[in-house]
Length: 326
Image 1 (cartoon, one colour):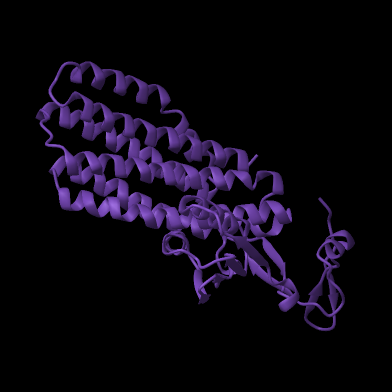
Image 2: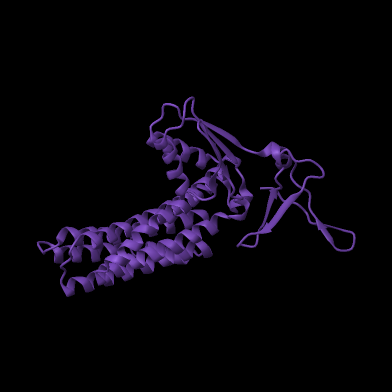
């Protein structure tokens, strides 16, 4: 880490010099403009202003003999790697199922749309400006959706509300969009080895991806609970329901603390989440003893397992927070 002295010039201007290596690595020169913003922690973030046409990222994808699933995987790879324009071409006419594979992926990502199309070419443009989407903002939006899904899946379970359960299932695609967006931005951060965009050293950027993955997995378990509500007729005793509800409330509290610890940079909140492991294990053992041999055991076990995994992902978030702050 380098230090720079603040200098005063004129009547009201403070200036600092930029590290020569940083300027050269970004191929900057006198007269180029820098974008400056303030992070949540109060640090200044510097970015080089886009240069124009020479910085446009072009990708091409040949799909002549590819199956739809193969096309989907390759389009996702291109999206995660980042592009301004993607040209999907075929030596013959693009088949309807191949075109549908492209459309299927574009429905699952944010910002990418078909700009032009012929019988053997599809041109996709990415209209997102990543500078307007700080990593923490993406993760915050992810958590808002995940929190909604988890709360409503549990409410659907206790009230046997199949309509609410179906709504949770339909929300999963929205979480996936933000997860892919977060993954893409994190990959770009690692490739550029840019400390300023994430406000952490490059080697710690990967923790943002771990947190995004944990949130995405919590959404998956919300869907799993909702599928059980939608497809099965549950018959659970009132006493067991109370046990499950109390356990869920305890788990959700620890998830909230873990997420707050990340956004606030609060080690103590992370520790509270991590210190609950023994109590979680004790509660799981007690509930397992009560459901053994009872009707609907498999469904209850699946829901209990999902609650337990939500806690496990909460500890992952808490541990990432501690690692980021070390």
